[in-house]
Length: 449
Image (cartoon, rainbow, N blue to C red; front, side, top):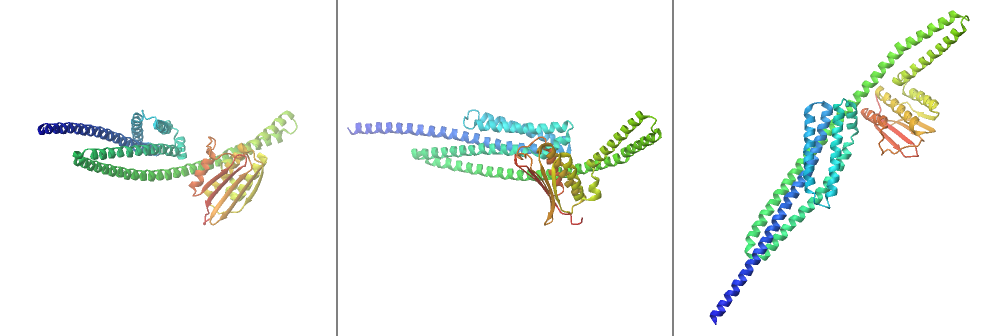
């Protein structure tokens, strides 16, 4: 009986051992496959987040290389730009493959894909424009800097996806923790191995965190370098705009002198010859006298047109009478031509000759826009000085506009903004539909004037 009990006990122990072995095997295999799948998810998530960071880096590299190409015209920046665009496209392809079956984040990935391709197309468009010889248009489009808004939109989408992947990363890591904890509790024989596995996992997690921190520092350093490069490129573009504006005004002045000296002399000589012919004909040829009178009238109109063209090219009143008198003459002529009441409160200000010309052109551009679009009845122009800052303000009671809506016809005021900034000042445009427009500029006072 004892033997049978012993045998029965052995059978139970064996059965229990088999059951326990089966339980251990099931728990062990389940824990293994769950851990294996979680690690695969971690690898995929880590690779995806690296692709998101690489995408932003390549777009920033492409933007910087594009600006270098516009400034230098050399092939090296162009090749760098296109290589960066290609690398960005490869990152997009990997992201599209990763999110193909993710119904939740797939729409955000598609928005990121569209935004990146739009930015790539914008960069290629500027490069094509520059390669086609439209250098000034390409530089102007780059100065206007629409790419910054696109890049911020791309960054926001990438950050959103990165945050979602970070949540997935945390979930996968928590899944591994639960698996290891359950495995340790359920299998006493696997305690040591579980501890070792946890130790290695924590060490790997620390290595991943250190790698992530290192990558963040590298990205921050790259971002700082990009910001410095953008700041330098902006300064160079402003200097270029100042040079182009100076060259334009010099050419205008030269053309005005040529018109005054050459064309003015020709028209005056023609008028004098016509007057001599008229005096010699007397009253003998009425038809000829009538045609001579018409010819003299035409010459007078040509002389007047020549004067207007010269004044538009280079206002002589600004050089001869000063800024205040020149603005008063400009306002009076604009009021007579546009049938608008112009009220002036002009105080003498001290500005350099270049800044005076900038102010004159600003008011002239404002009058032109008012005549074209504003349908105003009253316009106020004022100048003054306070705390070493000269202010120029033009206000109208016209239909106004929305400053946030960029119009293709707004290049005049945009050009004036950069011209004022090139002289060390600022330009502010305030307008509301139906409530008129206020254009104000501030320039530093010239103490030596």
